Image (cartoon, rainbow, N blue to C red):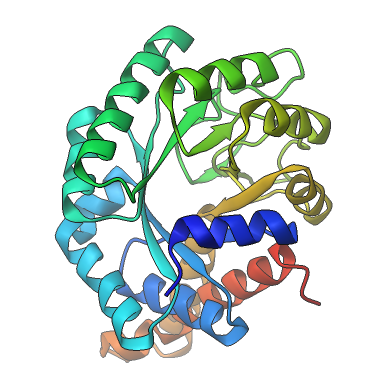
Amino acid sequence: MKTLREVIREAEKNSTAIGHFNISNVEGLWAIFRAAKDLSLPVIIGVSEGERDFIGVAQVRALVTSIQKEFDYPIFLNADHTYSLERVKEVVDAGFDAVIFDGSQLTLEENIRQTKECVAYARAKNPNILVEGELGYIGTSSKLLDELPAGVAVTEEDITTADDAKRFVTETGVDLLAPAVGNVHGMLKETHDPRLHIERIKQIREAAGVPLVLHGGSGTVAEDFTEAIKAGMNIVHINTELRVAYRNGLKKSLQDEPDEIAPYKILKEAVLEMKKVATDRLKLFNHIS
């Protein structure tokens, strides 16, 4: 089976992006895996600190590993948005394929210092794990939004610059970079999310010299995904859209079958709805009609 690093290189070569989908339970894992397997595409499973606390660090690693081994399939596990060295150590020691240290709310200097510590620990413990850094604040919650969160970087003046990206990657040694380029965590209720700054993505990719990761993909218009991938985004995160699909599917099941009490029957519609979202996004990221 190919490594995550190899899969990312292929995505760069083909001008495609790997779908990164967050889960909170085994239903989400099966929905995403089945969507990827039907399309014969690699996929990344993401778990934030809160999601890891709910599922269990060792438990989610075991679940993803079991699928990797049983199906000999390129499905990878990423520790999404990790905010301390201690929690980075936790997932590195558990054998995750990748980890993100999120110092986006810190000063540039402090973000560099703490990210560098995380990279050093990961390299010493497991040189194969990919370490991602985040530069520029895009919010923190994958939820439906009435308005943009205070302080998010969406204007051309506030988003990540190519110079800062180059310095950050050079001084930290990260394998991947998640910049702020107009993307926002969560999804606006009444309209699509802000448009992405495609030209800035190109500039950052050239200056940084490492693959870029687009966080906060939910709510982004299709055209921006396509252009961002062409410009150098090789991993795209989707979470809020999956959560909405899960809720809608569960709501439908409970309304259609109010007397049903078997969880695997009640949750079937939620799995199907999440699979639809993952399938649509994977097709878009890989130019499949």
